[in-house]
Length: 219
Image: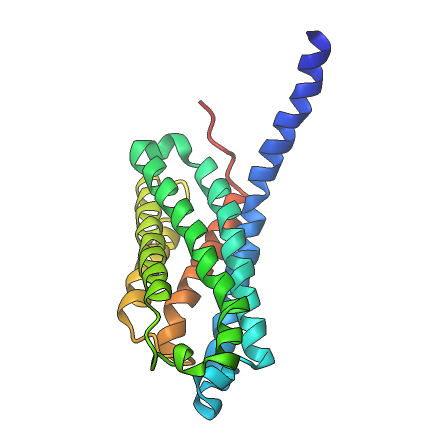
């Protein structure tokens, strides 16, 4: 029994280390999202080529891969950010984390499609990409996952604002980024499409930076 306990202890330490490293995932993921939407706004040639043709360019591929990387890293980041305020956040903070985590998990599917599905459709069915042909299943998936992600991030941001473990202005930036993203026109390659997501990425970077300086809460 003593040997079993000694071998189990390092596994717990490794899990704690993994969760704590999510602070770096928050910084890297946030930076990747910011760079992705700067590319969307300033580099991907939507105006010159149109949406379908732009989806076949190297700049679009780079931007979408960075978005996929950031979204996957945000799952890890949420674990670390929540771990450092779990007790102070209480029940509301727990549910905010759960909704944010599962909303982000669903969003990974959306962004995966941006990398692997949309370029294929742009090649074989460009009318589907431009919206000239209805795609009810795709529309339903986007309609479900994107709002759930937004609601989760707002709830998580409110819990973070309440606890005060992280700077409240950073939590406020995270909260405000969602209505900015939802209510500005999502026209591809424009400032209005990019600014809200740039705010999301910046908030994750800032929270990740402060998470490196905050010890996890213990019961």
